[in-house]
Length: 109
Image (cartoon, rainbow, N blue to C red):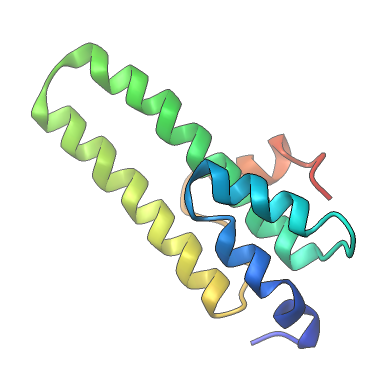
């Protein structure tokens, strides 16, 4: 576990994983008192949500339950991983895409 600093941003970090609306709400929650822990998880949550829509559009082209199932399982694993790390007050990027999310959404401070 981290310091009280992580605890201060924990609520925004958890909310960031609750759909794209939650990510937007968490972004505005973090605007007044910038918290790096919350910002980290907001970037991760935004990346997972955008990946959901982009990969979902790509998976729909194949019109196959196997491809669709693999896509939903992949996104679900990323979402659970991110949510658990936020609950445990850790800053671990989600597997495979997490470091890219931190780089691509670095404007979220």
